[in-house]
Every structure is written in C-alpha cells, then in structure tokens.
Image (cartoon, rainbow, N blue to C red; front, top):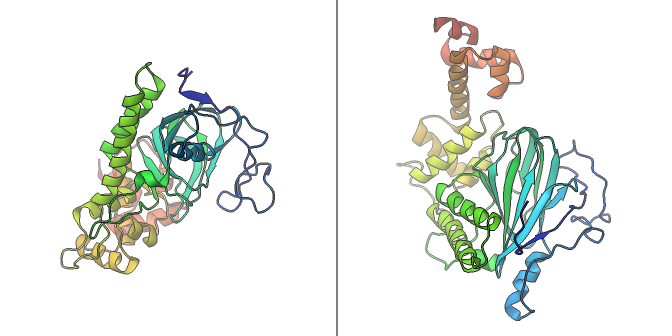
Length: 351
C-alpha cells in the first residue's frame, strides 16, 4: 500500500466501452454515443497535490483531467504530482485480475512496464500494429498526445506498471537539422537508460521522504530529457543505400522482430521504427541483411524453433504455435523449406 501524501487514491476506474480494437471485450458503455472517453462523473475525483492556482499551475490542472481509464474498479492505482507539467500513476494488478485500459487525451503518455506476463491480451497504439506480446517486463510504450492507446490483459503474473503524463511542452526540443521534434508513437520498445530513470522515479514515489520533492522534480526532468535523447538518437533521414540501415536502425528493427516472432509484423510498422518510408526501408533492409524483412522474420522464427526443438521440452505443435504457426502442417512446411528436414527429423538428428 502506498501511503505518501503526494499520492491520491483515485479509487475505482470507470468502465469503458471498447469497440473495434478489442472486439472480444464487451464492457458496459458509460459514455454518450460518439464520445470516445468514458464518463468520470460517477467516479471519485482524480486529485493531486497542488499549490493555489496560478498561470504556471494550469498545466498541472490540465494533466489532472486526463488519465488512462482502467476497468475493473478494484485495480490499485495511485497518482502523484512530479512537477508542474508532469504526473505519474502507479498501477498494480493481481495475477488473476483481468483488466482493460484506454487512453486518448491532449497529453503525452509514457507507459513503463516494470513486470508482467499475460496469458492473453492485446496492446494497441494508434498508428502502429497491435501487439500480443506475452512478456513485457522492462518494456516501454510512448503514446503522443491525440493518439489512442488501448490494452487488455489476462495476467499470468502480477502486473506492475507506471503511467507518466507529460504536458506537450515538456517534450519539446529546439529544432535541429535532421532531428525530428515530435516523438512518434512507440510500442514495447527498450532503452536501458530511460528504463533505469523511470524505475528510480517509481521507487522514489513508492518510498517517499518528507524532503524528496526536489529529487522527484529532478528525476522528472531527467526522464523527459532521456525521452528527447532517445528520439534524437534515432534521427529521421533517408539512408544511403550503399550502406543500408544505420546501426541504430538495425538494433531497433531486429529487436522488434525478435520480440514479435509469433505475430504478423507489418512492413509499415518496421519502417516507422526506422523512421523511413516503406519503400526506402525495404531496400535498405535487404541491402543490410541480404533478405527482405518478411524473409528475415521467417529465418528468425526457424532459428527460435531449432533452439526449442533442441530442448526436447515441447511438442512440435507447441513449438510451431510459439513461433507463430497456427497449423502444424504450415510449420513443418516452412521448417523443411528452410532446413531441408522436418522438425521431427531435425530433432532426431540431434541424437
């Protein structure tokens, strides 16, 4: 239980009508037709500690009006002010507590997944392909202002995450040649420095002291800086095809593919991660790796399947499902095409 006076227990979250992105979830609608946000009028006020109103406080009040909507009502959520223009919510969900969440607001959102695995679920950020990633511990998601974020989870283990809200001005940076100003949507990405700063912030909020407000504000500034730095470190530019993808592009794209082996990965999503048009990305990718993106994805699936076959801990059918093949026959065909033998034959050859 979090007991810091900085925190306000916002209590039950309103139910949300999910349509389109997650058709399997049918929650009672609480919003008027056409209203994309749920009605907060019957839920406890989302309050935060703030000084008397002044022009500089308007950003805080604005942030306090917007947050991720969570259902069911007994999910534990605590909200705290970090600084003017930045607030945080810490969310804890038990192992068996299936929950859904939704966000659409004129503020930026960083989702910090400290720990969690799920048996089933979808995560969707407007502009990106949805993800059914099962183990998202240590992952980050960024949702720009005005973009919709939806998620539902059937947790396999307790879920601990933090939502950090930024007034848009907090993440603006001076325009530099070749460096994008706006941070694009990013789903389940990784950055060790950014994650470390975010977790320091979370720990400070969970174990407060009477005089740590300045430290919280400093961590908030650093977190915003790290987000901007991450964006600057991956500049949008047209590659010289002679060299293919830059090193940072190779890292982020291959990491994404490896994290989504069991899913269909669209060319548009990979191109967006690399900050390129699909046309230039496809050419640069093939120049770098010698195969087009979809072929690389298949190769990585087969390599993962080989590793699982070597353990002899799973059936061929289960391994096929794990690497993204819903039919054993499809998995066998793809494996034999890549290796010259069937999965069972490969396993027998290992002795």
